[in-house]
Length: 126
Image (cartoon, rainbow, N blue to C red; front, side, top):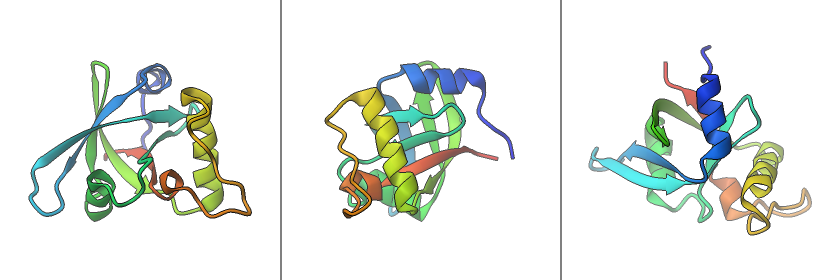
């Protein structure tokens, strides 16, 4: 399996907001949204703070392909829904470290937050 370049990981670390383009699950038309991104240096993650009810998470659940624009870089990606609660909470911690205390990870004894339920790892498109 291929991986993202160092340039992509560096951009994910430094860019505050990135543009995600999905295809509408009903219309097939491009749908653009600005999202936050985090990385642990080996993986890329995005999430919808409003949960799975937003259009873009529904689009990538229906058709897991998208384009990510990080500054001047454009990368084709395959979003993979994170369903493991521990991993979703870990991504919340990454987002919190980058974006501040407005990102509130849940505790293991609590239900996942809306953002945690709509967390995706971005994989390189093959």
